[in-house]
Amino acid sequence: MKFLDQAKIFIKSGDGGAGAVSFRREKHMEFGGPDGGDGGRGGDVIVECVANLNTLIDYRYQQHFKADKGMHGMGQQRTGGKGNDVIMKVPVGTQILDEERDVVVADLTEAGQRLVLLRGGDGGFGNLHYKTSTNQAPRRGDPGWPGKEMWVWLKLKLIADAGLVGLPNAGKSTFLAAVSRARPKIADYPFTTLHPNLGVVYYDQEEFIVADIPGLIEGAHEGAGIGDRFLGHIERCRVLLHLIDGTGDDVAEAYRVVRGELEAYGGGLESKPEVVALNKCDSLLAEDIKEKLEALEAACGHKVYPLSGVSGIGLKDILGTLLRHITQSKAEDPGVVIASTAIGAGKRGQEGFFRRRKDAVAAEDSEFEDGYWGADGEWIWYEDDEADEDDVEVEDAAAGADDSDDDLAAEDVDDEEDDEDDNDEEDGDEEDGDDQSHR
Ligand SMILES: Nc1nc2c(ncn2[C@@H]2O[C@H](COP(=O)(O)OP(=O)(O)OP(=O)(O)O)[C@@H](O)[C@H]2O)c(=O)[nH]1
Ligand SMILES: [Mg+2]
Image 1 (cartoon, rainbow, N blue to C red):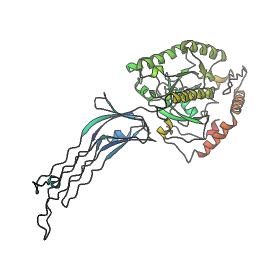
Image 2: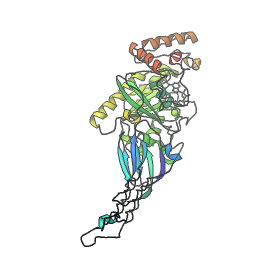
Image 3: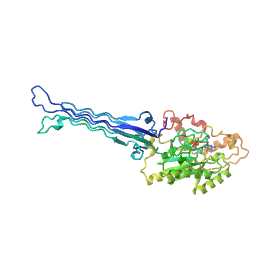
Image 4: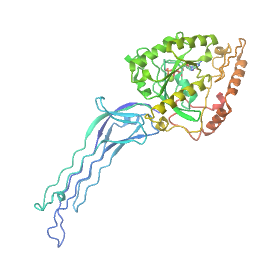
């Protein structure tokens, strides 16, 4: 799926049809009188918000949208038909702005919303309309009113419940892949993610949507890196998850850089509830984790969660916290759309599946040599300096066994249904193999 979040298009509503000038002419019928019908109305330009779409890519290929003209009126009092409307389908979260991008003409936040952007021109009157007692044979028929035309911008602001932010390589896409069925591109170079990805998370009988956006670097608000262009997509999130790469030297500074960019962008991002997590804990020593957690807590002034998107450490804790924020924010302000209807993805009843990436267990065994492993949720440390490859695998199996049975059952169901229910939104570039094989 290609992603496009803004497009400039030309829209024009249909001209009205002309009214007819006609007189009734029949054998043995004198003074038949005027019988020219009115012209039909031109078609409207309508914008409709639909689920199951999360890109404006269609508008790259077609940029002109013109509704049909109304039919002209005809004799025998026939009114012209209305011209066909043109209906533009846009994803939930699309705003329509005027040509200068100053005025938001429409903000479509709910699937099913429909709005007439330009009304078609009215049809002209036929001469029947002008018949009066003093003018019984009018020869006047009006032309239709012209339609309107304008250039507008479509701008998509994805609607998700939780937004992922962080420096490049912080592991945002890995996190999204671990908690949802989205398959974003993941690689160990900065700016792997070039456009936002959405994933549906099922957790604790609830579902919510997480948005992964390209990494931010210092100066992003001035255009550095990919810039802050994609921050618009998390403007409507209820909570932000700020990931910090634990393998970096100065985690507090990494935190500050991203906060600085969020503040420079504004748009309410700076005051959104924020959950901060120290990521990649699987490749850190216990004492480093402690030290870095403390440094981060000092920098942000609240709790910081240890996390590893690759091994699954801490995922449940974080999902639980995100869900709490989302539920609370929904209770306070239900106004924002329920995101799951927005992309219409996923199904209920598949809550709580975590996945490990194929290579998670074997990933650079050297990283695990020190044998620090945490079982998800409990954060148990195994300290075994002599740990060799086999030991690591045994520990991992133990960590897997700690997952609740429900989760495993949910995962089984999920796997069986994988084939018949492929989800376009979540199909990334990478093909998803057999899930069981990478546990
Ligand atoms: N050891 C370890 N490596 C991780 C973890 N999460 C991600 N990585 C690695 O870090 C690198 C970057 O991960 P991505 O998920 O692509 O990072 P990102 O934040 O999406 O990066 P950008 O899209 O470039 O902003 C990859 O090589 C991942 O395998 C983790 O929990 N532990
Ligand atoms: Mg990424």
